[in-house]
Length: 98
Image 1 (cartoon, rainbow, N blue to C red):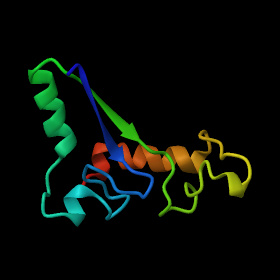
Image 2: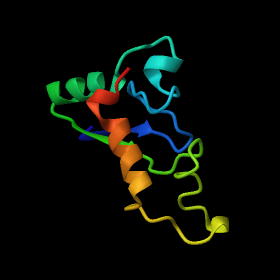
Image 3: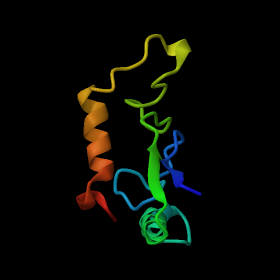
């Protein structure tokens, strides 16, 4: 195995890290209550496996992100939309952690 890529944020809005931007995250919504991304990152580094995280910009739980690439909604939304950037930055910020 040369690399591992995990879905860190699904388009259904579930995040695999603690964040205040949504209660739909591994720390708040499951009994696991830890950061699996950090644990996997460390484990991969220890055995020289490249580690990647897939982050879905689309989020069906948030109006400004829902249907991001949904063809029946018309043209794709601009990923540089300030609402999109604000949400992504807030969800990834250490200050947003629960």
